[in-house]
Amino acid sequence: MNQLWRQVDQLLRRQESALADDALRDVRASYLVVGIVLLAAVYGFFMGWYAIFSRAVPEWRQVAADTWKMPTLFLMTLVICFPSLYVFSALLGSRLSFAQMLRVLLAIVALTVTVLASFGPIVGFFALSTENHPFMVLLNVAFCAVAGVLGVGVLWKALRILLAPKVEAAGNVPPMIQPPLPSQSDRQVKSLFRVWILIYAVVGAQMGWVLRPFISDPKAPFMWFCGKEGNFFLGVWHAVVSVFS
Amino acid sequence: MTSLLVSVEEFLRAEGLFARAGAERSRFWAQVRMVAVCGAIYGAVMGSFHGLEGDGWKQIALSGAKVPVLFLATFALCFPSFYVLNALAGLRDDFPRVVNAVLGFQSLTAIVLAALAPITELMNLSTTGYSFMLLWSGIMFAVATVCGQWKMNSMYRPLIASNPRHRPLANGWITLYWFVGIQMAWVLRPFVGSPGLPFQLLRPQAWGNAYVEVAELILRVLHQ
Image 1 (cartoon, each protein chain N blue to C red):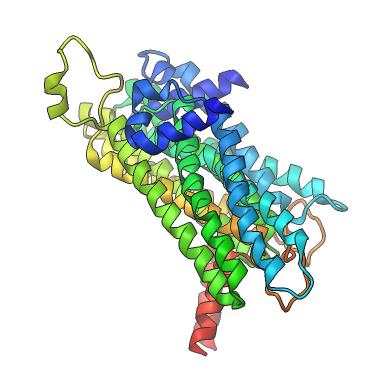
Image 2 (image 1 turned 180 degrees about the horizontal axis):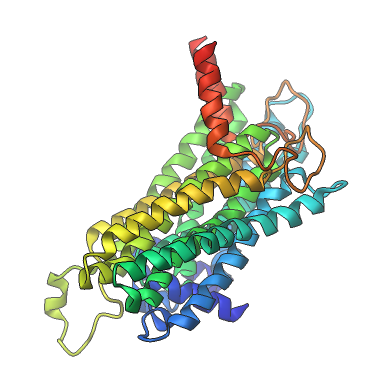
């Protein structure tokens, strides 16, 4: 347990340098997975509070649902994306090995859910004091967006450090020490980054759609899932069409 | 299985077997294996749209077989004429490397499709719309094909550098391959399986011609 927190703490404080080649070897994938499950569950737990306080009869099942849905969302998205992320990374000439890539991605997800979990108590407080359903939805979307943007930012820096080390930094290093990975141009790193974000966003969005509802409408009865209908993209499309009609 | 993953890795990064000189023959068989296995993975996922109820498994098995057939049969059909064209252009000695390069297209397309298969399966499990899934697979094929074309170009580059006559031949291969491939895909329909129709090996009107159909469609629209 101690080890686990040390790992998360390292990630938070040293961010991308904790992900640079040497330090990456100390990152333990299994610890990160446990950390992701726990931290995402914390956020899900607070997310579910709204169903307790907004309803006449508290709906505890929504708390249970959100507590397992959040870790599932993050881990399943990663599992489903991983093959494509790996193939595109190899194709774009990145030298990241399978294990390295797994650690980097797990670390980024761990970082994202750490930020998210830290927002948990605030979400809980608002759930306690707010009746308005759309407001709660927007609040959660905003927090997820902040956590996502921070995670993506660190991913970008980590990829740059791993794949395209700065030339001037090489001046301080004795010439005998070869950089561990042949460096890539900034452009290559950028296209790899874009492809990754695109794939991850598409899968994450659909995964979130599958796991709906996270914050159920207090007027509607509780349900575990909304049932098999449509998909994220059609949902957005219908919303856009209904705005103009 | 491990050796397949190793050759996929070496193929993607163009190292090991795919960097060694004079290993054209083993490269060829490694590529054929990649196309067969990876294509089958995506095909099976594409065919699993209707789940396992009733005859569901038949569609899964059939689509799993159809995608490798689509790639490899098209390749086999175009191969003889391409060989003759190369020999005529005086490029007979480079031919083993040329075959590796053109098969690079199918190999990469199949690998990218297999990598996208989990995402397609997620869509399958969470969507009810047949037309959406057709469109989705269309987009996946388009993405994979663009990657395949890019890989073929990069494998052809050293050949073109050594002899510029390879350039028109590479373009000729692509034209020929698409011309035959589109008809092959038309003959092999259905890949996903329309929900309204019973399970069928091929569509009853399978032996039509894709180009004639499209021309008739255009004429019909113009005559309305």
